[in-house]
Picture 1 (cartoon, rainbow, N blue to C red):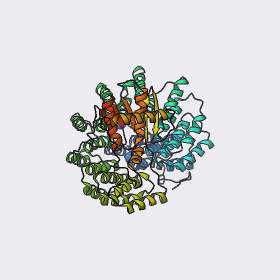
Picture 2: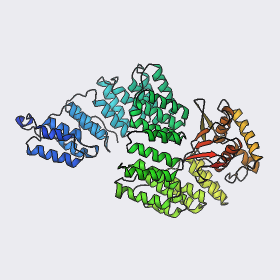
Picture 3: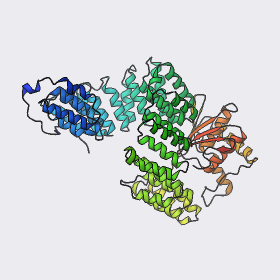
Picture 4: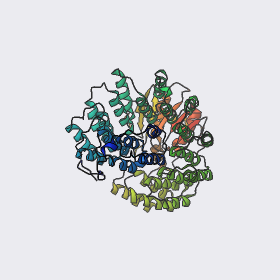
Length: 598
């Protein structure tokens, strides 16, 4: 629902207290204790002490109390605010900032409207807080109104406001508008660059983010820790290990190595780029580790198939007295799921709320579904989803649908598919999975009906895309197409590889190609030029013998590509690190780290 900047008092303002009381100077003890408060209860106790001292209306004390309120206590902060007779812009900004960090950030809009209605003019800090709240709430319409107000009041080009405008539009999915605003800068503001780089990363445009990083340096600007975080996130998305190593070296030389968040981003980058050893090295060298750093390393072990090490590190984390959070448990549950530790995983899930005070989210529920479904406990997974205390997302049902395909349970798969359609009927991959399941079971009438339904709904399957980094450049390949400049050479190399592998026993796995009118040769041809095969072939052509090939794919690797990669690693004496939608596969000497369990 759209909100406009009209008068909208949150609560009637109390009558003005006695001036003499308001001007009293509070004793130093309550103010000195404010910085030591670690809970709402302690703040309330301090407030009670102020009331006993007849200082409950003293603006400096109330301001400090409001500032000290955690984001989860904004109702209390607002009641404090309402006791101040004539709040100034600093107080309005303080309350607005609190709401922008809370679970209900859109309330910052009402605070801004109330400020205007009270005749208090905004300052340099008012709009950044308001725009951050709109970004957090994905409130595009309110963000546009805030932009209009900033233009009207002369703040739109302010050095604090313009970067937050860029971020707001990007967070709300309007990257082109963000780009247009960025173009209005003079290229000398590192904050604006950081906003645009971060925007590109969050919009899954890592190549653009890295191009902006180079432009920032070309303009003589010095990157900040925020720049480093965004650049490392871009490398992680692309799987650009060599570029990530270059940024790591820059971090070392320019003093960013003391930032815990930067080191955590390095762990994440190395893990997602396939170099677990480098991730471990960064983690071991950290002098100070917070929850996020431990969690990043646990996730790194998990996605690389080292479930036992992930769990062992989690137990070590607890012994060190570090409190786990939601991300920590995602890593632990993922580790259990991908190593078949079902009962251990369920135990950790049950301990989240009771022992550790971590409220499970939809992703944790998804991990439990995956945990049960991978182990073949499909009916339990269905009942788990059906009994959730919240509306299940399509992703949960898709997890079950995929597992039904792997275990050949067509009937339960059809039930899961029906539940998906109730929530989202536009995802082409769902139709393909259930169609293939029906085809494998000989249910051709169902296959035709599903394909017709897919056509009627306009659902399109996402094309496979794989990327590989060669000579500090990331090259992308799509299944079957010829857009890459060396696509023709890659296709020829795939043909050569297939023929060489056939001589040592490779047989294309056409068991998952379900087209009733296709002959065996046509089925084999449909598999031959999958994107990961093209990327591997490109790597074989363009790198020296013995070089590790690192490939990133946007979808789950298919069985035939998995088999072929194992044989390539043996026949060509290459290690291949392939990151697909689910996990990492390390192919070496004809085997894979996943143990064919993915």
